[in-house]
Length: 200
Image (cartoon, rainbow, N blue to C red):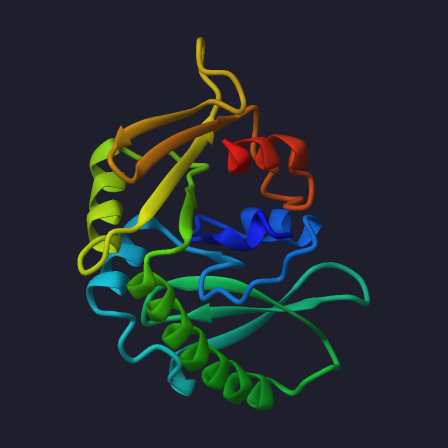
């Protein structure tokens, strides 16, 4: 848990947030359980996520099968899709929108504080092809005001097995694991490999 709270997810989905949960850590994070693309995060950082949390931008939808469907949220201003871990029948959609509006505004303040302090290691994993130029844009946006450390996690390559962490720039790291959790089951992650990456 002490290790896991040193990190904060930047996306591109909820996998690392679930890894933190498996490590008995539940840090609050704006993007912890969010599906988001690097260009949306860059825009958010550039604009300091100004205006996030407006009720009209929050679109709940139910996902899942059977009796246990979860409310997912689409936040339109910055293109975030995220889990609520609230299920059908537990909230009305109107109440959920207002609660999420308040929550997003609070998480924005905390996220900006974390970025300003420069103590966290920010994690961006990419399940789709992401270029070094896109990663550099994200890194520069994160370091606009304060020096921050960011690790870009990808799947392993020949000569770069799972657990490898290399320095691309001062404060920009690239890490490798054997695989990411499949899209249909985000809980099917390789926990030990994630821990190894975090240690390194």
